[in-house]
Amino acid sequence: MNLSKQYGGNRSGKIGGSRLRRSLVELSRHTSRDTIVIASALTARKVIENRSELNISSSDVDGLSAVVQELYGPHLNLVLHGAGGDLDAAAEVVSLLRGRFELIRALVPNCALSAMALVACACDAVMMPETAVIGALDDDHHKPVSANEARGWLFRNCVHPDRPKRVEAAGRVFAASNNGPRAALSASLAKERGLPVNVVPDQSALGRGLEEIWQSIKNTMREESLMKLIDGQKGPIYSVEG
Image (tube, rainbow, N blue to C red; front, side, top):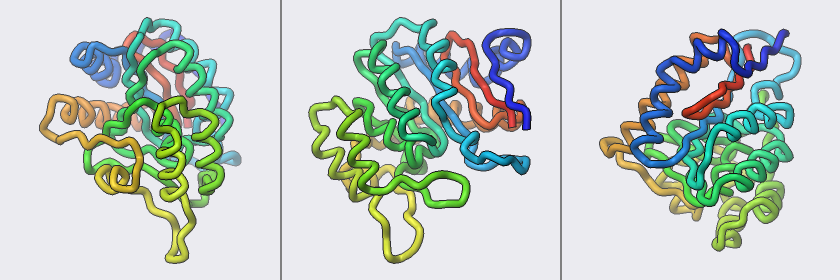
């Protein structure tokens, strides 16, 4: 399978002028914060040898770095969608963003699972509508994260004052169940379990903005046949074709 990583160029310009870029610009204007989206597909359209390519990996951090260089901060909306990936790569993402932004707010329009959920929990706050989900994921395509791994990762990578509470909550959320596969949690249930989640009303300005971005992510990844993408309101887009 051929992977295409895009920095600038004609294809990037085409995607950059799309509905997704416009929705990122609009959210940045509304919130007076820079905005970055990190999204990965949960499934692949084609049979591929390495399912890990569906998730954020260390090789993608250069793409994120290119996007970050165009932004100034100090506050960031970090839109997350997908199942994350390698825990070391997730730590690199958090370290890179913490080096540039003073306050990072994770926005989850649809789902942040596995390592992506941990990235969200390492941010200063998590904002998501009730219909979105966050937490563990058990399937054949993504590496499961154990409760011990979740606790250890957050202990090392979360700098928020309520880190102990978040570490404890992550252990509960990522704990294996005797009743079958672990399931992701709705916004209200995740908040009840102790994750740093704030429920965004659907009809609020932020709720409408998250819905617009979610639809834009879906359309862009489908129309451009992407497995993952990283973009900011100023670009450049980084993408991997699938």
